[in-house]
Image (tube, rainbow, N blue to C red; front, side, top):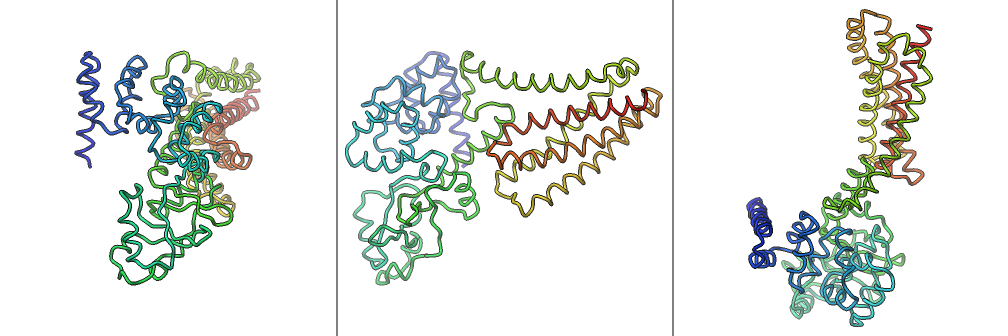
Length: 450
């Protein structure tokens, strides 16, 4: 596997070199020898001026597969130049969930034109998927399944399979349904291949598998796959009727998107942002978040201004002030990250929230006392004033306790009111630790120095 990845990377490097040198014949040959995923990776790793050149070199019968591997931004960029007939052509043969993801990038009237351009069978199959949001099980599933009845013998099932030219990718189980298409159980291919041909499916199938409800959130679907090591899983409606199945490749996409969302949200950016997005598109997205942070900085500055007189009397306060805010910010970020991760993994519930909050408070107290002692001695020796050492030590203990409490409670509160804690938590937490750090340090100093 590692050797294949190295070889693939070497091919991509050679292709990039050929593209830069302008030898387009070599580029076309190498490009169409890559897997769709590698072609998509190359497109996303290229500046805008090269992307359209590369896209025009992709063979038309591979465009749909490559398009399905691209980010939403790039999909939209290429789709906008196509008419409905072209979209219908390149998506032919793709899985339903991949086609649905592509069509969701188009305006509604164009989507209807694409559906009209499809043959009746493909259109009927796709319409079962496309109306589901892409963040629930229905938006992840595809309808390409193999179903069997419990009364059949293994021999009959084997003969039935041999009539197919191929079976759907990621097929590890056959889905057992009744006459009403309600889910009953699963028959694994491993069991099928080693079972006595004369026994019935009913005798060999597994019935203790809970199917996935069509409206289950994609993050919960990903947790179930991770917890149970599934390759695929059936999806049912409220009445237990089989609608389709979800496969591990789609779940991996969900896990990657969630990871991207958490990482980019910390900086206030969209998870599907294009690394090579042009200036005109990248600038507004960053400017908005910088504006929000500037507002919180003014809030913190306004609290510092309250203690202007004290700072003028004791210049050492201005030197030491950032230390208190910085330590609180780091401690709070550690707690916030642990809680956000626990929430994302489904590990945090009402039953264990209090334990986590108490643990973080204890950690905040321990670290507060430890590092407050270090800072107190350092500040006292630095400015030859043990009083200022005691003041900053007390402020640090207070701020680290506040940071731990805020870092633990904020993500719980935000989750309850349907706000993404990964996106808004860091900004709110930084404001709290900065303001509280300045107020505690400068307030204690004002009480002492008058």
